Image (cartoon, rainbow, N blue to C red):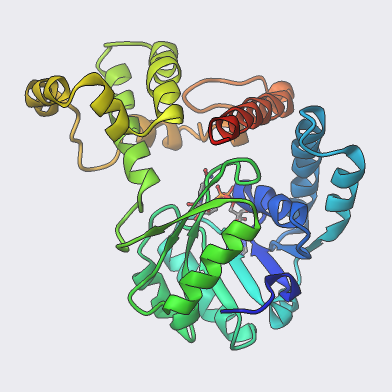
Length: 317
Ligand SMILES: NC(=O)c1ccc[n+]([C@@H]2O[C@H](COP(=O)([O-])OP(=O)(O)OC[C@H]3O[C@@H](n4cnc5c(N)ncnc54)[C@H](O)[C@@H]3O)[C@@H](O)[C@H]2O)c1
């Protein structure tokens, strides 16, 4: 196992939603971290987003203003690929597209030192398949975070067929040193754990709105007030035990057959994407947003998540 992770030079590659948030959690835990992205404009936007996220942490008393300022100073930004030649750890956060990831790893795994640890934050692409482009794939594995990773606690670590136990062990340890709760995913399956669960729900949620059973707002409310609240306290198995396995079993017997089982993605989301409705980043997704209010929405999101994490931490004491 790597002796001191804090001696490693950490490079987060891809300056979009995830990369921008990830550099903050590395820096908050006193790692020297570098955000690499291809375009200067992406890095500029990343700096602005980091300011907004940091303000929410300061407002919620998670960090003092001084600690937040020091955190910002520890983050470096670059669009120069030479940063990889000194990297001890690389976490890739580029677009969720296997050919693009292959091109990235083909090049980057040859630029880094041979003992560097290499991770992808893919939401669910095969680690084994991605590793085909990685030079020395034993040092490569999945390290999957959840948006916004500087606040949410879970990290999934997935080994591909060629990843070594030592690599996975080091990445689990790194997640702990970043103050997170890592879980090891035992099989390299599409979507790993949490996304399989989340997407099973999203498929049914979109289906309910598409078929006119409920509005977007009603589905969102039902998720927050019942499913989200229960599952924040306990997982599905404990919730079922509390309600009675016999009852949940009887409901499953008539309900499973009626649930959406679309196999080709979501027609609803296909339409949104074709219309350029990509969510906050384009000002509209399922809902439409006032572009001027988007920074405020991100602040509000961060504030709610911070309060939830604080609340969940209090359960464990
Ligand atoms: N958004 C989420 O909720 C979320 C959660 C967990 C994991 N992920 C995964 O993280 C990865 C990134 O997602 P995101 O939401 O940050 O995407 P994003 O679209 O916000 O950002 C991706 C960034 O990567 C850049 N990029 C693309 N190709 C590149 C390359 N070859 N080199 C350097 N930069 C490149 C793009 O210009 C963009 O700035 C994806 O694999 C995604 O599945 C996303």
